[in-house]
Length: 364
Ligand code: DAH
Image (tube, rainbow, N blue to C red; front, side, top):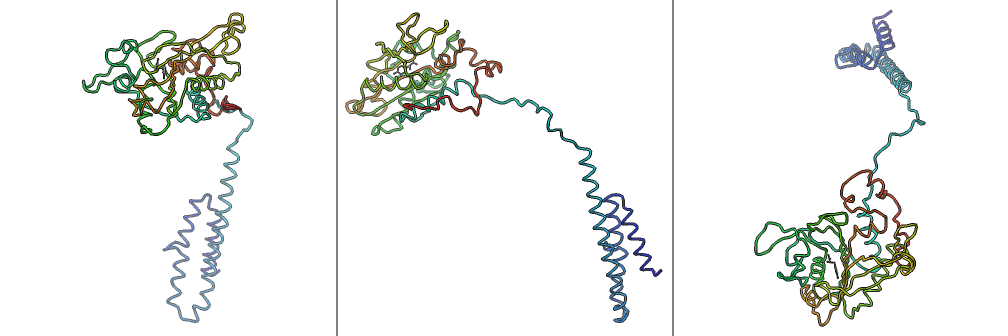
C-alpha cells in the first residue's frame, strides 16, 4: 500500500471511530487544519515538476475530498444520534394539569370609573383630571367657599405644610377640577366633562375612609337649565344601574358652588330583605337613598372659571364612586375597599378581560 493509501485508510478509520463531535473536530484539524497532514501534502504540489503534479495532484485532492466527505457524513450521524437521545430522555405529558397562574383583577372602583367614562362618553362628556395635592384657591375659594366659610371646617381638610401665600391641601372633593376645566377651555367654549378621582378627608368609619373617590360632572354652555341636569342624571343612573325603572327625587339643598342646589335621591325597593335600586319606592319597604349633590353652577364659580356669567350657565354634580360601587355590586363595608385583601378582591374584583357589563351603552 502506498503511503497515500495508508494515510487515507488511517484517516477514514479515525473519522468513523470518532465518538463525539469534539473528537471528530480533532480529526478534522489533524487532517485538514492549517498544519494538518492532508494540507501538508497539498502544499508539496507547488514544488513538483509538472508531470509529477499531474499524476499526484488528483490523488491528493481525491484524498482531501474523501476525508472531508467522511467528516460531513459522520457529523450528520453524530448530530442525529444526539437529537434522538434528547428526544428519548425529554418527555412532555400534554395531559398533565397546568400550574395555576395568579391572574390580576380589576378593582370595583376602577370598574365603576370605566363604566362612568363609558356612559358619559355616550353623552358627549370628556374625562378631565386635576391634582390631588391642590391649592386652597381651587379647592375652596374659587368654588365660593371663602376663608371664613363654615364649609371649610365641614370638610375635615388635610392641610399640607407649605407657604402662607399659597396654602396646599389634599383635595377634599373633585369640584376643583370644575375650575381647572373651565380655565382650560378658555372662557369661550362650552365645557362638558366628568372628573373621576381620589379625594381626601380626615374621617374614618364603616362608610368613610380618609381616601375615597368621587366623580364630578360639569356642563357649561348657553341656555342650560335645571331640566338638562335632571335628564342627564336620570340617563346616567338608568345606564349605570342597568334599569329603566329608576326614579329620582331632587331635594332642595345647599352647596356654596351651586345655586339652586339639590341633593338627588334614587328610589329603592326591598327584595328578599335586600335594598335594590329601582322600582317604585312607595311600595312595601321601599324608600329613597341619597346618591349625589348637584345644582346650577353659581355665578361666582362661572366667573372664577373665566366665563361671563351673564352669557354662560351650567350645571354640576358630585357623587361618591365607592358608594356607587357598593350600591351596584353589594359590598357593605367601605373600609374593605382599601385593605388590599386578596380574598375580597377575588370575590368583588372583575376579570381584566371580562366584557364590560355595560355592553348596551346609553339609549341602546
Ligand atoms: N363637592 C361636593 C362634596 O364633596 C359634592 C357636590 C355637590 C359637587 C354639588 C357638585 C355639586 O358639583 O354641584 O360634598
